Image (cartoon, rainbow, N blue to C red; front, side):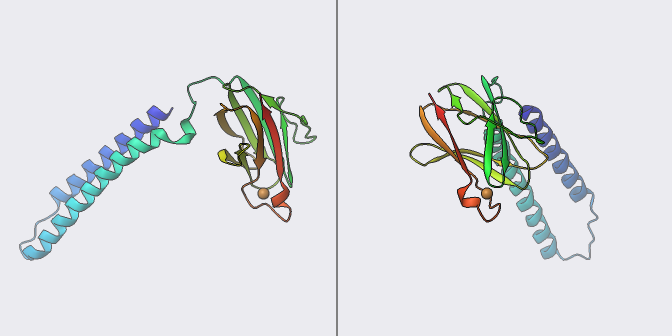
Length: 183
Ligand SMILES: [Cu+2]
């Protein structure tokens, strides 16, 4: 998927460069135009072209390293469904019914196993941010009504992990918290 996106991006970049060059080369060279103006336009063309190439190289290196593609080629060993609501999280290894959302009180995951969190919201936008026992943010994703966002992560350290909402969602946003255990 990311390779085809990258390919598409590079093809579009190529097409834009070709169009730009064609328009520039086929534009009329009016004798009346002062040479100073022409030089300025030429400089601007090269500036934009070089800028474009630099940005294209930068994007083609950084986009594949985006966290959206992390663990994309691996099959998750465990799937955890997450439904967020003002002002709590429901987590379950079964799909959660939005009409009657129930989850498990204790979620236990195995260390060094790929977990996929399927995160949604039953009301407003929330955040799903995982913190380790040292209170360091490890991974996070948005919880959005009408969407299921997938967050894949492999926990290397056993311990207790806390989940906080990172999207201001109302008066009790600051108490919106859950936790799980990695064995
Ligand atoms: Cu919130």
